[in-house]
Length: 170
Image (cartoon, rainbow, N blue to C red; front, side):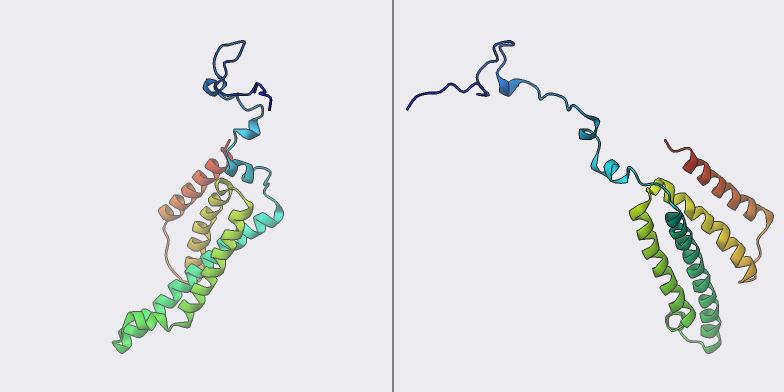
């Protein structure tokens, strides 16, 4: 058996530098993709399509609808519990409005998960601000609640701020 010299021996000093291979730093990666985190790779190339916008709007509107149904159901359940002297929890748990509101809210949660699988969170989340305006408008029109000018101004400021944040992303 002949002895062969191993040129890649990590303990053997490099002829040019005199430093053993094991002590030399690893060479830098030659491309940017090697340094980019995996989550950035996953979200790159995802654009806001018509289908994504439709899914976002469906998610926001169904969440708002679920909230309105829950509020209406709780108004009925509160009145029923007060009239009968029974438990509000039992009255709420057996209310068809509340059960339907929870179902609609669950559908909106599934739609939101689908949105998150397609759209970066920094783009999708500001769309939730529209829910403020939808709920405020619907609570006035459907539930006959009152809102003053400051409520409207505050809601528009919140929505405007979130829109600015969404548009200013790098």
